[in-house]
Structures are given as structure tokens and as C-alpha cells.
Amino acid sequence: MARDILDLMAAWDGLGVVCRHDRPTGTWIFICLHNDKLGAPTGGSRMKVYPDIADGLEDGMRLAEGMTYKWAGIGVAGGGGKAVLALEKPLEGEERNGLLQRYGELIESLGGRFRTGEDLGTTTEDMNLVAKSTRHVQGFRNGVKINPSPFTAQGVFSGIKAALGVAFGDDSPADRTILVQGVGNVGATLARLLKEAGARILVNDLDAQRAAELAAELGGTPVSNDDLFTTECDVYAPCAIGATLNETTIAQLACKIVGGSANNQLAEAADGERLHERGILYAPDYIINAGGAYSFALLEDGVTEDAEILARMDTIGVTVTEILSEAVRDNETPVAVARRRVERVLEA
Ligand code: NAD
Image (tube, rainbow, N blue to C red):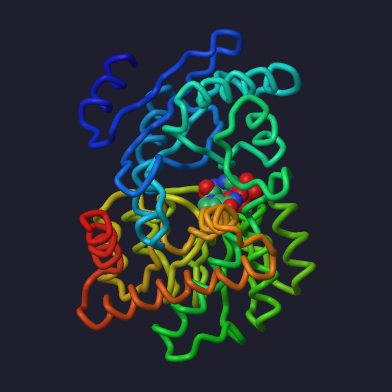
């Protein structure tokens, strides 16, 4: 295990990793700092049990890199960073609260070199607790921590419309079939927005009951895990976990567009090419899912009304349109176009 961690650190192009073993809970904390050209590394805190500690570090490194692209991609002055709290076992009550408090102290000791918010496995309440021991938690409005998920969902909604516009020449979701995988905080809100806009909704979730309930609410159809990638639809919206797009699943996909909130949707870089070869338009994850991060930046710029923050999420649609249009025009992958855009910003 130690060897893997050293190999990962040696191969990484980031600034460095702050690593702490939290003895009372046995948790490994990795604060991965990827890039600070545009501002202090800023990204969410993921809490999860990993099969191996090195998997947690690798996840944190990939996610931190994604944050560098995310901030640069939407033109916000933030750096790439992400934290992983790799648990030995799920934690509850006092044990969990103690860990979060000590994690806050660790962030505070970095003096603003890392700023954070919620991510998979951490809640808005958790971030309130972390904020008791550090000033470097994002997303407070009048002293109250806000939940970024509705803004992320609105940004994905805007990005899906943009992709429909590029693929079909009409950005309306009306009568389009959209499969949302993972109907938690972001996915359920997204599904409701799409339904309101007239789309036919297909729903998949590891929690079959959650999927069935939302499908019933929206007059949609639940899709089983077995049928997930072969079900015909206009848009597949991954809003659950990363790496759902790989050589096997891309060969099965029966959609025209992929656009959803999950981070690191491509299992490997070649998957961007594979989607392109299959004629599937892919909205790069770190652009289309940037709404939550963007909402925090807007709050810090004094944009505090929900309605105005939601309206600003149209920026994400504009960016997705620019990237996908350029990709279609030049017969390139959207991944390559987005990457070039980000590099231009970082170099400038
Ligand atoms: P969540 O935990 O509220 O919801 C995730 C849902 O996915 C749950 O319903 C869960 O049962 C389901 N799920 C988990 N594994 C699954 C699988 N293998 N197949 C199908 N369903 C599965 O999380 P969320 O806040 O809605 O975030 C969803 C995704 O979007 C995550 O990947 C997250 O990193 C990403 N994201 C979220 C935000 C945000 O603002 N919340 C911002 C950017 C990116």
C-alpha cells in the first residue's frame, strides 16, 4: 500500500498532497493541491470507504485536477484542489463529528492554501461542522451554509439544452427521452426540471425504490442496472458515480448525447475518442457540472439571491454550446476542445 502511494505521488503533476492519519477514527485524510495559478486550490471534501487507501489518494488527485479544469473552464479565479477522507468504515454520531472537527482544524492550519465544500459522502450539515474550526469553507450566505446541488442541477439542465441545440438544431427538451442515472440531490432536481420542460424521463438508481418513486412522480420509467447502457434515449445523464463511460459501456450506448453531473465520467482518456467515433456528443463533465462551484464563486462576488444565481447558470449552457459547436465544426472531440480552452486560460 505505502509503495502505491509513493508511486502515485511521484507520478502526479500537482503541487502536493497534505496527508494526515486521523488516529481516533483510522481515517486517512488527503488534501490534494493540484494548481494555484488562478487562485487558492478549492474543491469539495469526499468521504468514502475505499477498497484500498491508495484508491482514495488517486481519487483525490484526479478530482483535484478536474477542479483545475473546472475553474479555468468557467472562467472563475479558483485553483484545483480536492480532499478525500478515506474511511476505514462508515462513521456516525460523535465519531464522525470529531473527525470533521479535526479535519476543519487541519484545513485552518493551511492558512487559506485550501478551501472546501461538500462532495460525495459529505453533507451541508457536515460542512457547517467543519466550518466551526476553519474559515475556509465556501458557500455561506448570511452565516448560513447553502446546498449547491440545485445550482449544479440547473447548470446541467442548461448544458443538456445546449447539447440538444448543437445535436438537433433545437434546444428544447420537449419530447426528448432523457435517462438520468442517480437520482440523489442533483439527479432528482435535474429530472424534475427536464420533466417541466416536457421531456420523457427514464430513471436509474442503485436504490431501486428511490428510482421507482421518482419515476412514479414524474410519469417516467425506471430502468434497471442491466438495461442502463442499452436503453434507447436522446440523452444519457450520469449523475451518480464516475467512470461509467468505458470501452464496454460506450459500445453499448444507445443515445445521442452524454451530459450529467458526475465527476470523472470517462474511465480513461481514450473514452473521449470512443464516444466521438460512435457519433455521441459528450458535454465534458467538469464544464457541465460546474454550477455548484460557480454558485459559491457568485456568492463571494455578492450575488446572493437564489433567482439570480440560478439565472447565471445559463453561462454553463453558453460554454457547452461553444465547446460542442467547435468540436462538431472541426471534427474534434469535445474533450480536446475543452482542454485547449482551459490551457489557454491557465497560460494567460
Ligand atoms: P447523492 O449522493 O445525493 O446522489 C447520488 C445518487 O446516485 C444516489 O441516489 C445513489 O443511490 C445513486 N447511485 C450511487 N451509485 C450508483 C450506481 N452505481 N448506479 C446508479 N445509481 C447510483 O449525490 P449528488 O450530490 O446528487 O451528486 C451526484 C454526482 O454529481 C456525484 O458524482 C457528485 O460528485 C457530482 N457532483 C455533485 C455536485 C453537487 O452540487 N452536489 C456538484 C458537482 C458534481
